[in-house]
Image (cartoon, rainbow, N blue to C red; front, side):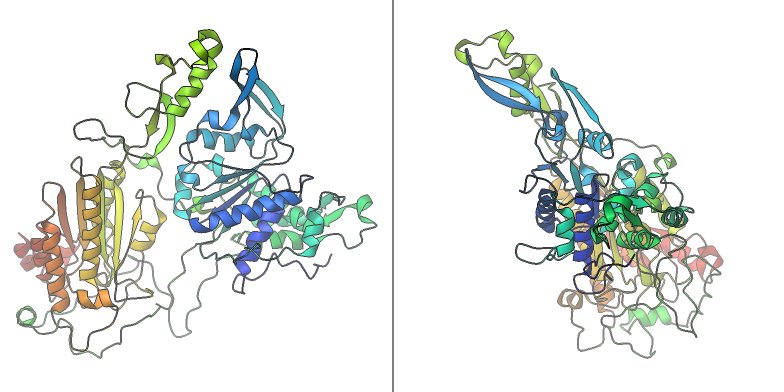
Length: 640
C-alpha cells in the first residue's frame, strides 16, 4: 500500500521541523490507538512541556465526542495515593455541609480520556509509579478505597519526561509501560496555536470520532519484520515487539484507506513498510539498523578505545627541561603552533542521545557495593529540607501536612460530631511530610583529557568513584581539554546524581583535544564546592576533590573567561593561574575538603602535579604503572 503524500511521520530529523513532526506523529498515534497509552520523552526542555501537553490534550479531545481538550493531571514527587484514587466532594445535607469521597482523577469519572503529565519520571513518587504500572496497558481496573468500589476501563494517556541518564535508575517494569519513546533534546516549538506544526487533513479525519475507524490487520510479513528487528536484543521481553507492532498499526490508521469503500470488510493491512516507519519513528537501533557513525578517512585508522593496545612510548627527558620551565620558558616546545577555536575531533563517535531504550546501556548494578543511606544532619532545631516524596502518619509536630491532616479528620466527622459543624482533629489524624534525604557527601572530579596519551586512568580513579557510589555522594565532573568541544578555551562541567550516570562513563572515554584550560576547570570545581558548602551551611559536608592532570595548563584564566585568545605568548601564565585557583580552593577548609592529584608522571615537567597538590593542600597519587616508566624513582622521591 502506498504512503499518502501528507504522511511525514518518517521525515528526516535533519530537515526543518523534523523533530516537531516526529513528536506530532507520536502524539497523534497515542491519541488514535488506546493500546499506546504511554508516551515517554527523553531530555525534553522543561520550558516546552506545557506546549507539548496542550497539543496532546487537544488531540485527545479530537478523538472523543467531547470536542474539548482532555483534562490534565500532573503527578510529581509529592503525589500520594489519595491524590490519585479518591477525591473529596462537598455536599449539603440536613445537618449542614458535609464531605464525601468519590473516584479520583485516575479512576476516570469523566466521559473522555484524561491526560496524566509527569514532568520528571525519575522523581515520581512511589504511589505514582505504582499507578503507572497498574494502569498502563491494562484492560480493566478496580478501586476499593475509603468505602468506594469502582470498576472501569483505563483510557488515560500518560505523557512523561525523563533524562536519558536517569533511565538506568528506573524499574524496567515501569519503563516497559511506555511504548512510545522519543528523544527531544533540541525541541523548539513554534509560537502560536500550533507549536508542533499544523495537523494534516488526513490525520484530522482519522482522529474524528464520527469517522468509522477501520480495523487494522497485521500481516504475516509485518509480524516477521517486527521479530527480525528485535530478535537479537537482550531483555525487554515481548512488550517491545508488541509496542512496535502497535505503532505500525497506528501509522496504518493515520495513513487512511486507499479505497474507503472497501475498507470495512477487509480492514487496513499493516505492511512491513509500516513496521520500518515505526522503527524509524522511535529511532530504534538494532543489529539490523546499526548506529550511524562518522566515516573515517581512507588513510586514517579509527581511534582505539582508551586503554586499548600498548601504551605510547615515553619521550626522553631533555637535559635541563625542568629548570627551563621554572625560569619562565614556555611550557610547550617550539613545535608548529595551532590556532585555537571551535574544532571537532574526527572519528569520535557521537553519543547515543536518541536511543529509545537507554536503560539497556546502564552501568553496573547495585550489587557491586553495599548502599548506605546518608546521614541527615541539622543544626539546633530540626530543619525540614529535601523534596517532598510522600505523606505518612506524623511522629511529632514538625513539618505537618495540613491538607492531608484535614482530609483524615474529615473521614470521622460524622462519628465525632463537632460543635457547630467544626472539624475535630485527633492525634491519629496528624500527617507529616516525607522528604528525601539530601546528600551530605560530594565527589568533584577534574579530568584533564590532554594528559592521557596511552594511559588508562580508570584504575587510578576507580577507588574514588567506588567511594562515591557506596556513600551515595553527589558527583560533579569537570572536563578539561576534551575533543570535539564547541569552545576549547573553556572547561565544562555537569552534576550527576550517582556514579551510574552514563555521562561519567562517556567523560572517562572522551578523546583529548588541543587546549588545556586547567585554571578554568579548577575554577568551576571551586564554584561547585562553594555552592555545596553554602547549601549545607547547617552542618558540615564531606567533600573530595580529585584532579587528574599533569599540570600543564596552556590557557590563562582570563582567556577562558573572555573566550578570546590573548595577543602574546602564554608561557607559564596558565600554570600560574591554575596554582592560584588551587590556593583559593584550599582556603575552603581542610576539615570538610580533601584534595588529591592523580599524577600521570609525564616527563619532562614532572614537578607541576606536585606543585598543584601543594597549593590544594592535598596529596599525590601516582599512576599504577609509573614504576615502569623512565625517571620514576626521582618522581617518587619528590612526591614523598
